[in-house]
Image (cartoon, rainbow, N blue to C red; front, side, top):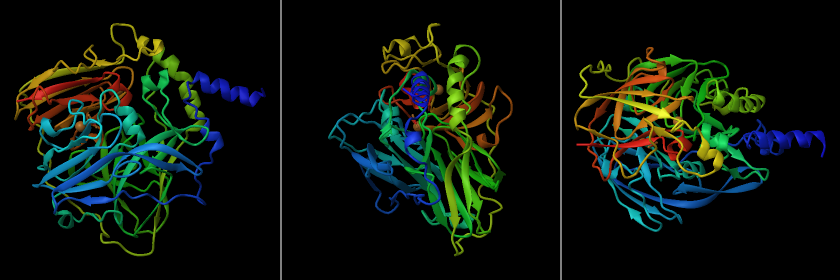
Length: 499
Ligand code: C2O
Ligand code: CU
Ligand code: CU
């Protein structure tokens, strides 16, 4: 065995395959062979009121030469972009054409628990699920994805995710671009790993269970570093972090500003310029970008530094940081090529929506959640021993399908404090929107956490004002969980009723 092969072998096994062998075999897409940005089909349900989805098996060619077994909604990998109108009902027919049970959750939709699609509502193989979704919330970019306990991470990784946009027909008045694929781009950002044959790889090692599974290649809508053509005008990007665990730090390589217009649950009063935006798993952020200059630009991401603190975690992540810093500087996400014509919107709107009301200070209840990566003082023993049982939890207990954790009164606002353990954890609550009162250990809020949200990255301690407007029973409750999907499947999840 020569030295290089030995080094490769020992690094790979020591880092438990965090170093992707495929990286040496498969050239990264360069400008010569860069794919164009795949655009998901738009299904506008505002007229028909019907949404037919089939969860299906497929094959997708991520890298030249090799094709991978994938899953998708109505397509081989990922799903369509659904656009619905505020005030309508959407009658869904979701056929599970997979050989395994599948739950599908509408992340960001404010709908009752009995149609929310959490782990209490698995669709059995061959069965049809027919929830009716009452759409009554401000315009926003929501999404839908597999939520089958404890298989969410694998199913989403294989492709079971799509986007759900809520529209109120007033974007022209607001001066916002809204032509799907023309000046309004839905971008599902995900990282993936590939094996030596170039096939999609999801082999979970101990490090992956601990940190969440990360890939060394960034895909947008299923393509690596694709190129988007757009008009020389103001363009809207709807950014969704659909990754299992990776946190992005997005910016343009020429430092052009991104003008934030919306967070998870709706518009901001006016565009707010930022040069870099952090996007954690499950979060969405919408931005306007000015391409009137006609210059090509590249969206890139800095490395994910969610590696944990000192102690055991630090020691174990040391090697990982080492290997990933070898591979990761800035990574390209998407290249933009403004073409000759002018688009519909050629000036930044000054205002978009009403001012946000000040968050309430009258809370019906205060609750406290501690996101735990070690239970019973024996961290990660389950992972090391390979028992496969839950090793993560909230407030010292792993998720238990049979035990409702909290009961909330319908129509109230509560104060939730969420504390993270060892890593930063993206905390998501079903069926609600909230305001972030404080983040990063109680200091004031980051730019990304302005506005209404349903997912927040907890770095130390976050405080939330949570509005409960949707009912949920004990049988079909709402979930709260870490959106690092391996943590969710590992038991960092709870559920609550609202009545
Ligand atoms: Cu996006 Cu409970 O998940
Ligand atoms: Cu959700
Ligand atoms: Cu977590």
